[in-house]
Picture 1 (cartoon, rainbow over the protein chains, first blue to last red):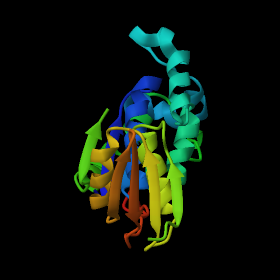
Picture 2 (tube, helix red, strand yellow):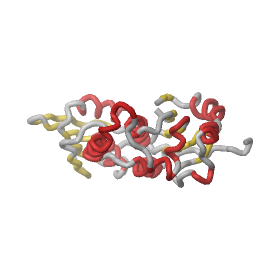
Picture 3 (cartoon, each protein chain N blue to C red):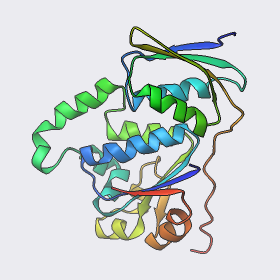
Length: 138
Length: 90
C-alpha cells in the first residue's frame, strides 16, 4: 500500500485510537497517510480541543482505565502525543476539513503546529481519497 | 549468518509488535540481518506477510518453547515521504 486515506468524524478518545493505530502502523511501512479530521474531530487539531478529549457516552466512566491500558501497551496515551508521533514519522498529513472548521468554530490560527492545513471536502475526495490505495472512515 | 541486530519483543502483541519490528528494520541498512524475537502467536502470520509487502526477506523462522525467532534481511525499499500538495488553485 503506497497511500492510505482516513476520515475521522468523532473526537471521542476511544474512537480516535483505531484510525491513529492504523495510520501509525502504515506510516512505519512507508505508506503515505492522509487523515482528514471532519465534523467534531476537527477540534482534535486545536490545543483547546485536544485537551478536552475523553471517552464519551456509554463508556465515559472507563476513560482513565482505557488510557492506562493504552499506555501499558506502549502506545502514546495522550492524543497530542499520538499526533506528534504520527507527524514525526514523516509520512502522515493531518488535515482539518474546512467546512467542519467553520461549523465547529476552528480558525486557521487555532491549528496545532502538527496539523498540515485546512482543506476542502472536495479537494480531499478528488485529490486524496480517490487516489489512495485504500480509504477508511471512522 | 551474521546477525547485525537482535530485538526482543517478547510480551508484545499487535500493534506494538509490528511497530517495534518496523522501527527495528528502519534503523538498519539494506542487506543487514535482524533477529526478531517474540512470543505472540499471531506473529507467525503477520511477520511473513509483512516481509512480503515491505520487500524484506524472511530468511528463517523458528519456534522453541512458544518463542518465535525470525531472521530477516533488510531489502532495498525506501520509505515514502509525503508529497507536497499544490494549493495554488485555491
